[in-house]
Image (cartoon, rainbow, N blue to C red; front, side):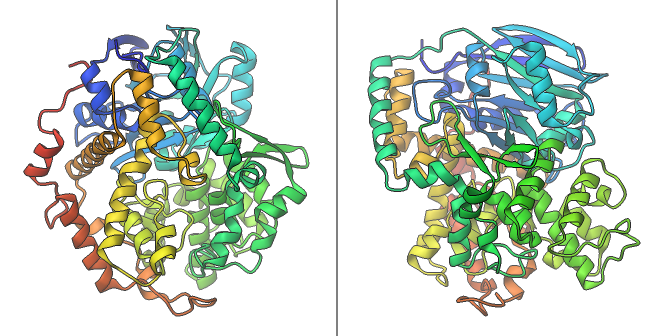
Length: 606
């Protein structure tokens, strides 16, 4: 039997409170790798185009990958795939920790969650045994508190996935909390809330099969030696992604005041250095992670894991917050309520700009002066969003819907792609990163293709084919890690040779596999999510960016005066379609689908 996989999925029907164990075919497992690949194929096969994200017919696929839980560095990633309420398209989000490890040890590679419970429930999977517990005492409880209460009841050896009030109230960018980490993008927590599923708890003792365990251990030792000897290792250990605040400000890509500016005058007050000096307690890692990049911080009586760079960018500079203590507390509020810090910061910053332009008054904002830099306004609006209270109910719909409701042509600075709020990089002088945002399958998210470093390498104002090819390569290799169930940081930040992961896969499964073969499967998955989106009504016009990046020049700093060139970017997009094997409407050609094997691809059990 192939190693790395349990070759079983647990199908959970919440409407009936029943579960079914299904065998997974080896062909399906290998062709779609795991994680987001499995999630995409199951959604493609089982969720019709008419299904509303909050209907019982929508599904959540929770899956690790073939490397999850094995003797491999940083192998604790869990992927949540669904139809997103923010975009009405394919959506997924990924969390670190150890959830996928326990899920596999309980006997399952994936959970397929369908239907909706009549009353709030908790799904418990204990070494293969499935039960449903009443969640009435936890419903309404903040995420971090609910996780603590659940572990006290079931045992600390359980790993949990929990929603907070934002998920319960169907805030369209609600998160799922996994051991203090968040799967936060695309509103996966809101879909969980629509199913009245407060939490999932998993524990297991089953061994995960490994084809060549001794070879895996040797590769593990080699990889760890590389990681801990890298010059950047200690900084990553001390600051994690917060170190990137300095870099982003230096290269003029730090979103500031709703992406009006690309540098922040107070960046030193919200960076990794200020965190180390003021609020940092310790670092924290995921399964077998030598880096331990998670940063646990304290402000007063509040202790929280975070912030990350994206949080510092979106709740910090983008809302003009000038204190790391205030940033940590805002991060805590989002984690407690179960909110995506990226979408929350983006949407509130948009509302702040509308208020300062006079498009909103205190009458519409419940008496709150929504001004940039106001800590009180930020924290109160986070609470109102989570509970859909007053003006918070409008912002709870996401920035795309909010801009339509507010009007005044505010759509031009509504910073989203396909309905997903843009994450923490200003792309007015970064054509490759702009293309990555415009073409990302879930909407604008940096984890699909972090191409801005290539812009820095070859030129901020070039729009050549090399950038298009690099974006496509990144869109294959970066999501590959989400399929395998591992973190990409050893590769992208500490220069670990990506061929290690092909060797890890080979030794785990017993199937000799090259990096090129894994990338080809990742390309297949990228085209599959495109098919899901097209079936749900996506048009080529939505592979585009907000007007601000084309029309509003960077106002200050070394890149003052630059905008994205609309005509040159249009040509980049055309070249992207061509190189992808898609027609001018952004639809994969039949020849491309045949090449990728998508016309006769296996289903879960076949």
